[in-house]
Each structure stands twice: as C-alpha cells, then as structure tokens.
Figure 1: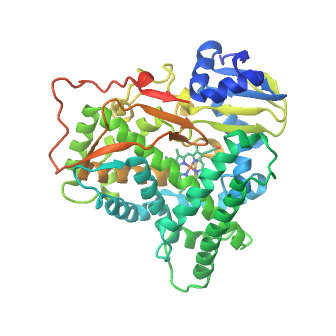
Figure 2 (figure 1 turned 90 degrees about the horizontal axis):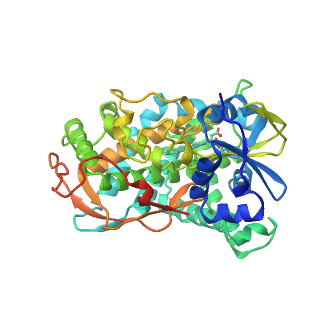
Figure 3 (figure 1 turned 120 degrees about the horizontal axis):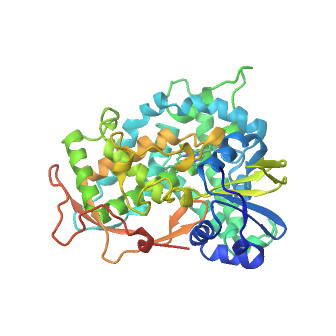
Length: 469
Ligand code: HEM
C-alpha cells in the first residue's frame, strides 16, 4: 500500500521557504524522516508536493506524464536557451523528440566513442606527476570538448570559445534565479541580464554560422548536427534553422555539465575508497593493457560502469526533477489541483535504506550483474524516466565509462587530507568550491595498495563527509 500524503509544516509558508533555501538537501532528508515519502504544503499560495518513493515517482513520470509540464526553473531556462528539447512542451516537444531520438540510439552514439577517447587522452596529455589540478574544471573542459566535437564534427569551432559564452550564460542565469535578484520581475534590467543576453547572442551567432556552412556543404558527415539537419518528419519536413539553433544550445548545456559532475564525483569517491580504486585499476589494466580505451573494451569495463552508476546514486548530478500540473490529477487516491508543483528528489530516493542496503556506503559492486540487488525501476533514476527520460543517457554512460577508464589508466588522483564535499543544489548538484586533486602518474600493473592504517572496506562515512546547503 502506498504511503498517505502528510502535511509537511516544516516547509510551509515563508519560514518554510527560508528553511528550505538554507539547506535544500538536508531539509528534504528531514522531511522524509519526519513525515514519510509523500508530503504536501503551501508556499505563498502555491501548492507543493514532494514524492520520494519509487511507486509515486513512476506514477508521476510515466502515468501522469501527459498532465504535467516542466517546472518554473526549466521554463525560465527556456527564455535563455530557446525552445529546445529540455524546455519545450506539448506538440513542439513531441515532434522534436521523435525527430531527434534516432540520432541518440546506441548504434549511432557508439560511433562517437573514438572522439570521446581522443578528447580524454588530449586532456591527460597535460597531466604531470606532482601537479595539483582542479578536477571539476578539467572535467567541465573535457565534457564540453566531447560535446562540441561530437555535435559539430570537423567544424572550425574551438570549445574554449563556446565555453566562454556558455559559462557566462549559466553563471548569470544562476545569479538571476538563485539569489535576491529572483524576487524582481523578469524584465528588470539588471546588468547581469543584459550581459547574459550578450553572451547568448554571441553563442547563437557561432552556432548559426556552423548550421549555415553545414547546410550548404556537400560532404557527408556523421556528426550529430549533420544528422539533425538531415532528419525529416513523416511529411518530409525537417527542422528550421531557428529550431536547430535551440537544440544545439540545449545539447551543449544538458550534455556537458551533468557528465562532468558525474566524473568529478566518481574521482572523489575513488580517492576516498582505496579498495574500489584498486579493483578499478586492476580491471582497467586487464582490459586495456597498453592500449587506449575503445568501444570494444566497454562491455568488459563492468566495474568501471558500476563506479559511474554508484557515484550517480550517491551524488546524482540532477538531484531532483520538477513538474507542474496542467490539470487536476489524483495520486494514490489524493486529488491535486492544476498548478500544483511536484518535486521528485533523486537525492533522497537513491539514499533510502528500503531500496539500498547500507545506503550511504560507496559500493559499486551492488551494480554488478553477479550479485547485484533487484530494486524497483524508480528507486534509481539519475536520468529521469517516462517519455522525458534523458535522451543523452547512452551518450553519458558511454562517455563517462570511456573517460574514467582513460583517466585511471594514466594517473592516480588523490584528495587533500580533511577534504570535505561541499555541495550546492542549483539546477544541478555542483561543488561549491574548486576540487583540487593531487596527480600521480601510473603504469599498468601498479594498483592502489593499502597501508595498514587505511580502511579495509568501501564504507563511506558520507553523512559526515557531505556538507550540503
Ligand atoms: C550523467 C549525465 C546526465 C545526467 C545525470 C542527465 C540527467 C537528465 C535528466 C534527469 C533528465 C530529465 C529531466 C526531466 O525529466 O525533467 C534529462 C533530460 C535531458 N538530457 Fe540529460 N543527463 C545527462 C547527460 C546528457 C547528455 C550527455 C545529453 C546530450 C548529449 C543530455 C541531453 C538531455 C536532453 C536533450 C534532455 C531533455 C529530454 C526531453 O525532455 O525530451 N543529457 N537529463
């Protein structure tokens, strides 16, 4: 029997809003402990619902998908990025998803494996023993390189140029949405808003030029943008240049920060769990030897894939999914009015002892085909689910596995003593400060060894280790 909905007084009203804003992840855990997995409350006259059990998540993302739109933040993002797949709704979304889905199928994505490895190797060429590197910045650079190379192919666009404008857009967007500026009307001419528009115009200009060149080019290319230019619907109509532009900006944004976060957190988890690192190094050495990672090696990099999955369980780059009810809907027998705002936090569901034994421990082996536990479909949903499931999930898993194997093959990264994970849940779950890691180069066969004083289990004291606000 599904849990009943409880009234979460803790989050109601202006005091609840301030309490939540102060530490969203901590507050969600408090709510789960105090009231259970299904709660409702009101803030400034708007009804809110949080659902934190797999059955309820599935009901919302799958059965009620047609009655729900994305939430306010995603709507606001649409003003910046245009109506690409992440922000569009209704008929436009349906048409675009149908047009784009074939290009994201594994058989097409697998052709991009070589580019993913090349970009990873290019980053690693800069790594030297004894260096200290900001790995979050490095992983952002790597995943942007990959997304620019796979989207644009051989077009003469530099990813640092895209990075400059995209980073400016996102940091200004965060400033507008997640600080005191958020209480002012959308048209208030803050310098931040004007600067954001300038960056967006420059980025749009770069992408428009590439679309123009590709449209007129006679040479066949296998990059993603060329595929999107070529696709047609059943009436023979393709995408307009304006729509292609919005989709390209969306893929840049949706496709690089999330994977960069998964890789950054995986490297941190490995640095804190020598046994898991040793097992991964052993697998990488056995599978790759002296060769770079490749598509052919992915199926045998099973532990590497499990590390990525376990990292996204504990540190989901998309930490919560938001929805807004278009019409009245009933969940578990309770009625909710149109306009109700729903939140489905992966952060809480992924750490629920009902679905995961030792939920705060970093245990990649729980995802191995031998001995992996069986859990309800929506106990783990880092890529969402239902019709709006992440279109880039195969891309992301392939990219993260290849990049992680490439890194582990060449270097061993460690964290400074006393490092504390400090997370900021904005649209994605970001580290508050740069994550500096110490670089040691390694040769195949030199697995991480454990000194007598080191932990002998993969237990993560993550409740102490996480500081989130
Ligand atoms: C670890 C990496 C990634 C994570 C955790 C992630 C997570 C998600 C989640 C949770 C959603 C659904 C949001 C919702 O239902 O409101 C989503 C949607 C989406 N993602 Fe990803 N994503 C990742 C990588 C990628 C990549 C690599 C791409 C493209 C190359 C991509 C493109 C998209 C797009 C276009 C959508 C919108 C799909 C739609 O609404 O039809 N993502 N992603």
